[in-house]
Length: 107
Image (tube, rainbow, N blue to C red; front, side, top):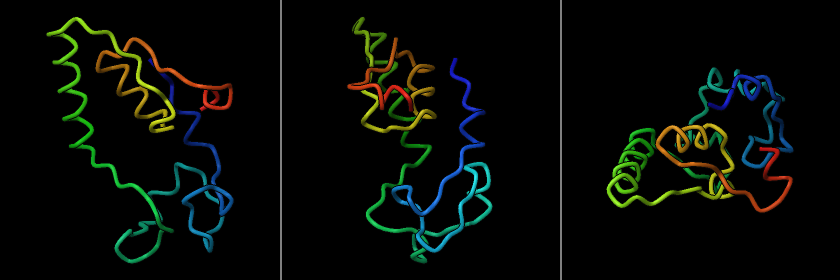
């Protein structure tokens, strides 16, 4: 299982894609407390909104599909570039995560 605790101490700032330009640098663990709102225009566009319920549904569907067909999957990490989603994919039955280069492996 992936240990994601170290990610929470990483700092993001205006140089990070999708980070509000006027906001000070913050640890990832402190971002939720900012209560930024997509609808209030707090975040730069374009951006993707991912619902936990949709991700859970997709993982369950894929887990059931692979179990019934015997298919083994190793999703491509660049699709999300999100270690938290990698961990969910592995927990749902993916045997690994693929990457195209060393930089992606670092995520």
